[in-house]
Image 1: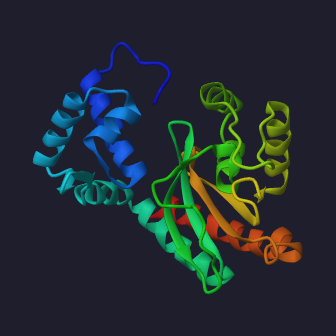
Image 2: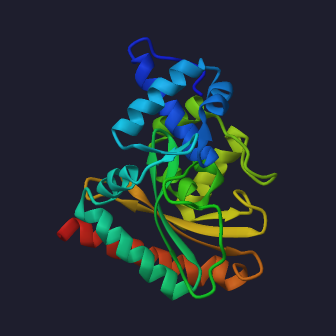
Length: 255
C-alpha cells in the first residue's frame, strides 16, 4: 500500500484496486481475510467485492472471491495496442528458439519493470518472470538495459521514487554502483544480471529504441548459471539479442 496518498485521488477507487491487487497476490480471499490484511471494515470490503462481482471483475466461489477472466481481456488489449508490440512478441519467440532459453520483453511503467511477453526455448527453466509482474528496474537485465537508455534525470527520478530495493544479496542497492553499472552497459551495449533477481540465474538484456529515440523496452534472455557463462554470456547470447534488437528497431521505423 502506498505511503503517500495524493489528495486529488478518489479514495473509493484506490480501495477497490487495493482489494483487487490483494486478491491477485493471494490467489483469492475471503472478506474477513482481506479486511484484516488491508485494515478495512468488513462491510467496506464486502460492498466493494459485491460491486466488482456484479461488474464481472471478480468471481465468488462459496465464501471466497477471486479475480475474474475479464481482466485477461483488458490486459491483452494493452499488449495489442500497437503493431510494435506484436513485432516484439514475434522477436521474443525467435530469441527463445535461437538460445533454447527463456526470453522476455520488458517495458518500464511507473518507474518499474513489467514483463509483457515471454517465451520458452527447448532447455528453458521455470522462473518467477510472470507476465504482468512488476520488478525493480535495477534488479534485472532488461530493467538495467532500460535504465541505461534513459536520460540521467529520469533515472534519478526513478531512484528517488522507488529507491534501490534488494531481490537477492547480489542486487545493486548503492546509487554510485548503479551509475557505474549503467556506464558499463552503455559502453558494451548490453546488460548482465548475475543472480540479482534470483540466485542461480543469469540474464542478458538489450534496450529497444523507438523511432523517435525514446525507450520502447528491452529484450532479455535468462538461464541457469551453469549454462549462461563464458562465451554464451559474453558473446553468443548478446550477439543474438543485439541483432534482434536492431531488426525490431528497423521494423518499427519502416513499418
